Image (cartoon, rainbow, N blue to C red; front, side):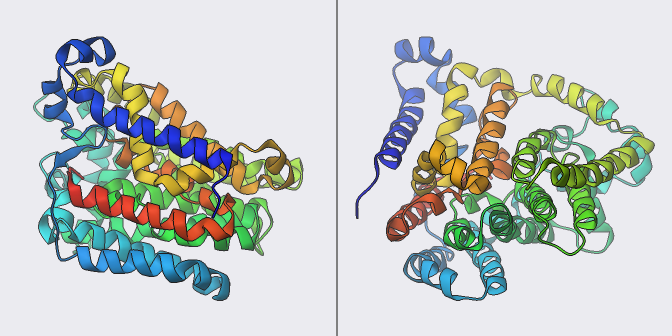
Length: 451
């Protein structure tokens, strides 16, 4: 098997970046100061395994065996099954595999530490749920409680996100599914469903063959390390289905495109009330719209989607929460916390190293092919999706509001990059797939991730 020049360059650059990101925080103080304006002690306090948020801890758990078996099976049989199974079975198999893969990886850390207890930590949403006795009142006072050092300030993750995230877990509790296990299950099921959404979108904007090539990579992507253990998995799943429905409507792949476009707008509108950063999903939406047959088709999709997204915004506004007010205040809250101890001199580039860890070297190799201008002109579909996700990540980085923890925070964008290996020669797929699986197992087994 030969490795092309583009993917070789991309992988070498990525490896150098990752090595530098892991090494720099532990250099001698005299070298560290001019590079990152911080002492090694500050990094050990806030990111012991920078650029990944966690601690060094080689460990195994009952999820280790299943995770290895799933990874080996995906490498050996995944590409073949993705070509032979009926299309519907491919999408369901991608979802099921992604779900089992994410759950097995979480179980390497154990049931409580790796799954059921993650969303019950002191800074997480579930700690705030019992205090919500009046939802309309909580929405109307939401912005006022964002800033820290008030008697009734929201806890960290609630203050750092729009109210949709908290409302989700409040509603879950109201229907009798309270607690960390049920919350984790929601994040796992919705987050892993992004695998199906992504290949549905790829088929819509490119073709079925490309989607089948992407399916194994998306199903056992290293991003799964953070899907089952954080609400960001849930955010990513919602956003992914919004983009998938938008792609189906744009390319006229459904019977009632206007209706599907409206549903896409609802999901994308809801997504920006889960995470402020998901406003950047507009880059992926724009990428999808550029694949329309003509501008009339793009406009016919955009109008109902925008109207329904606006409806979601209007509902929150009617209950007293204005998205832009929350966004302005959350920036102030961000700088009231540990953001001041996370120097941009380091995280501005180390964030990209965490992206490499989250998507795997196979995905990096695929991204190396995404910039082939001739290929973009011939088959723009998957290329523009990848470029849209990359633009979103770059903008998120430049905002200075994503310093560290980006392997989790950027899941709604990095998940799309895991489809990039579909651009690689099929005969090389098992090699790149194996590198992704090994990378995911290594991260989860040698680092005790905070999420």
